[in-house]
Amino acid sequence: MANSPEQLVRSPLLLREVNERIAEIASSSVGDPPEFLCECSRNHCEETIALSLPEYERVRSSSNLFVILPAPYFRRFADNVAVKAFVDGVTAAATGAIAGAAVVLGRRAIVDLPTAAIALGTLAVLTWVRRVPEPVVILAAGALGLALAR
Image (spheres, helix red, strand yellow):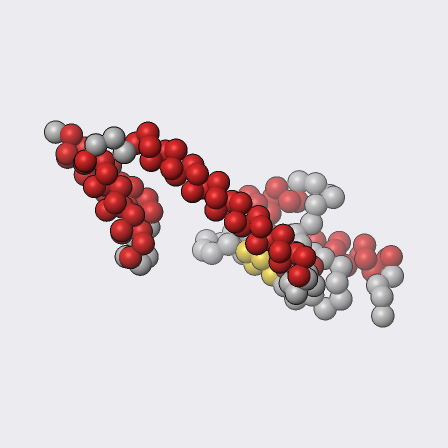
């Protein structure tokens, strides 16, 4: 059965009240971000989303904003061939743009044998070594660049 207009308004407002109580409790505790309830108007929605208190306060700052997890709305498009083709095209374009930027930056940054060695070493680490955070690789490459410059 479809939701009545009153239910469509009352459900998010009731969930907002519950989330306000969650925020009150979370403000007096330390730990992981609290799990807020999705404030959508779908019947039987039990989705939650972890938000920090400042993030929730930003949503709460306007009575027109609600915490809504969009995944259920996107699922209906998951098997749509046109949407998949669009996403594939956007992904390919973004990959091309990133690769193009890498080429431009590489031409400007790789100017001699030491910088070429650092670039190839960095590429090798990022390609074959698993779970190395990029900031660690960047700091190590910077330290190596400093050491080679002396």
